[in-house]
Amino acid sequence: MDHAAQPPSHLAEKTVNTTTRRTFLKTGTALATSAVLRGTPARALRETVSPTPLAQFDYPDVQLLDGPMLVQFQHNHRLFLSLDEDSLLKPFRQASGLPAPGEDMGGWYSPSPDFDPPKNMTGYIPGHTFGQYVSGLARAYAVTGDQPTQAKVHRLVAGFAPTISPKFYTDYCLPAYTFDKTSCGLIDAHQFARDPHAFTVLDHATDAVLPFLPPKALNREELAARPHKNVSFTWDESYTLPENFYLAYQRGAGPRYRKLAQRFLEDDTFFNPLSENKNVLPGQHAYSHLNALCSAMQCYLTDGSRKHLDAARNGFAFVQQQSFATGGWGPNEGFQNPASNALADSLTETHNSFETPCGAYGHFKITRYLLRTTGDSRYGDSMETVLYNTILGARPIRPDGTSFYYADYNQSARKVDYEQKWPCCSGTFPQLTADYGISSYLRSPSGIHINLYVPSRITWKQGSAHATLTQQTLYPDHGDTTLALTLSHPERFTIALRIPAWAGTQSRVTINGKPADTALTPGTWAPLDRTWKDGDRIELSLDLPLRLIPIDDRHPNLVALLHGPVALFAIEPSIAPNTQPITQNRLLAAQRIGDSAVWQVTTDTGKLRMIPYPAITEETYRLYHQTT
Ligand SMILES: [Zn+2]
Image (cartoon, rainbow, N blue to C red; front, side, top):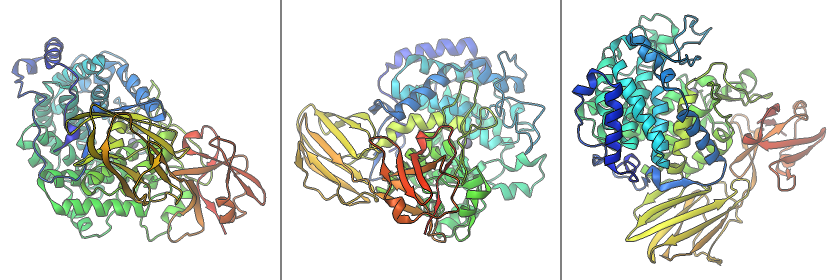
């Protein structure tokens, strides 16, 4: 059962339907009269055929508390809630010949005569992120219960409905790419914002795009072998479609979507060889193929295909083989051959090291799927590595669409915004930050797993008890986390704590001040099984060692320094003399300056100051050090 896909329960359906219908009839056209309310958005979901040892909680169950993740979530929520709806709908209205008031958003989002790929990417994919903004808002509504957010989702869906037309996709370079995001927005509007028209709109949108989709999933090489108007037509991503098609089917949109999902599985060139543990990643576009692994996971969950689970697990393991110490991957948006110098060479050859918001969004999704399916805590280790070292250091999206895109791991690196407004990464960022809560905890048959140590509160039903668990923590700056429990009555269950694989030997856990009777084995869960009662308190102290991670096996002396999960970046002014190798012992003797986030390493030529990625602003910085 896809627990994540259950709708929020904090709203009376009556209110929802009244508001929606009025808004819809006002703005909708022919579709409004033909719209059949097929079932209710709150209908029971189809069981997934592959039961998983762990399950997701629902969005309203987890609330973030004060901390950097809440700041990012609220920023994105507010920004997209205030975006002008005429501007958001403009590319669709223009294409269908409807009146299209409002300002152009610009960048990738609005059509432009300047578009000339790859030289000039202005006007690249009009309307591409519309569905992701709807999805981010629908999920934000599910988290917060904020009525204006729900109303905005419903207005956007209603405003989109009359624009649906094959004209939109005529001469459109990435029909599958944009439709995948549109369909995600519509199924999330249905599921999380209880939009009763979203599935009808999805049916129409699907009818409109089908003539423009290839007969099966095609990668860039295959697209390039077909006639194409310009290079951008070879960048479409039909192979990411199945995940949202499967979800549409699971959420009740109809059996057609399951068939469509199966049609676009990238079996021949990707999943079949991956399932046989052949690394076919090198040369493929990075984020979209990481994302395709999520389609394989949905195929496993929905159709029970073991082959696709193997493909996803093996594929993700291949990604990890070629990841940076930050957890990021795919320099210049491509997967590399791990048996080459490509990763190390990228440190001098590019500044486009990791496509951060999109990559982190995909990374959170695939690790959440694999956590649920395998129960292996190391997928949680991977998720937190990406969280603390990549996305939490992303610059916020600005109201004009200026967005953060690439993290830079060059030997002389800077944090910069992307040259084009409203790129792909402005679409995934609000989706990811809305998912922070459901990524932090997982449900097990015997209780609850704590996956991320973040200030947050989770409320759930445990047996016959109402349970609330509140996390207070400054992790990963410090290793201490307090978990306070409130329970309506005593109940026996298990609270399992993720003990990261890198944790040191001095980690401790106490319950109500007394050492807990459990092993803290790095790379596993520490299960605390007992009869819990109201007021119980768990104190976890994770030992955060300093450690070095080489960029790959071929370059054992090219290393990054980490404190626990946190990569430390050397910042100016002492960055230049990288010609003078540092000894590994000196890096490992780094000293923290007071209680700050700043670390200091003594070298032959002076002091090297080091800070975590989120603390970097305008400084030049470096991740990797040549050591002896
Ligand atoms: Zn992106």
